[in-house]
Image: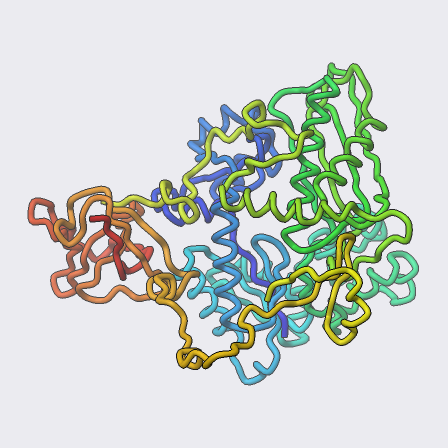
Length: 417
Length: 150
């Protein structure tokens, strides 16, 4: 059996852990730079749509007394780790799917009453960490996603834990699930299916295998089988990510090349640092820039470019050099840029790196990066940077509504009387 | 284990030892413990870990929170500035000190008196909090240790 454990409105719940006065109150959490709404508590959902642009909703926030926060990733990251580690005490097989979701596998739990085991997991996580979760069990991963939705949608009836363990329950659940809500079915996918009058997950499972494979490739067929209760996906315990990105909206528009170059170099270094943290190298990097599409009267431009690196690397120097070359290729003068980003791909572990016969990384980069990382870790801030990066101060993430980092900074811990 | 550098021409002699050739020489593993020529230290067999405050105070890192005292309501059990090590996995029992919230008010640190249904302030100058039938009490954790600068 698999289970999907999902934290309920995770970021909003994190804000509540140390501040009970937020219980039952509407909460919205903003993206990096306070740009748009990326998380809402249930109470805020009817007033604020996902992705709402923060400055356009100022009045709404005020009118409905919505508590608005900058994203506090130090807090969310720590609480997420605590949730995942607590889940690990219930089964050793866990795949951390995102900051607030994990797939669990239960091997040899045949004689367990999983529904009540789920309730126990839920209560434990709530007591130990303070975060409410929902748990859905089923014998495939795709079905456990649906099972989770049911647990979340009907908390009174399920106690936040639901098990799909009979044909009857499976069919009922599939008929209840709209096709666009099925895990792995994107918007385009579901539009094509809806055009053929396939409206629910159940309708999808009634299609012919051969037709599904022809239209949606083996991935679609695998999904269909998963929904039929035939396991096709196993726990993906691979720790490393397939792509790492650092992207930001700027707090003001930038037009000049040098400021943009500095930003891109900084993003590149941040990606390189993330790569080194997971002992990996990358072989491809993508750089993108775009203007502010909310300002309809301005000239609009957006472009991205992917560059192949000569050898796998995690060196900040190499990656930022190539990122700057890539930027040079796509930068156009005369536009006001609002956002840029660097994404590194083709990621593989260090120990699987293939050396190039003719060009390889300067062997000095590796120990240099290690030294930089060690020093920065010791100082707790990025004091050591490479030349292309911004030298601080000019760019600070806009975080006007940041809550205390209760669990990671001594001077921000909860104070009680 | 450390990697030390060996003179260049030696590489042919080192087949059985794991080694690494780099620009400036050949590197082989070097074992710090070494082989002693004299009498081996009689303490070697009894090597133990140093005392660890982490192991003693943070044995359950995933359910431990740190909280600072900012008021005098629990004086002189707790002083202003004390760091409390709070365990969320423990259940609040009678006479335990907990980090508690009554009806979604801010967290406060108080002692539970089950028989009298009270949250007790150890400092007599401060009022106790009565718990009524329909009050909702949330416990962030039980105060298990404290760290105090002298």
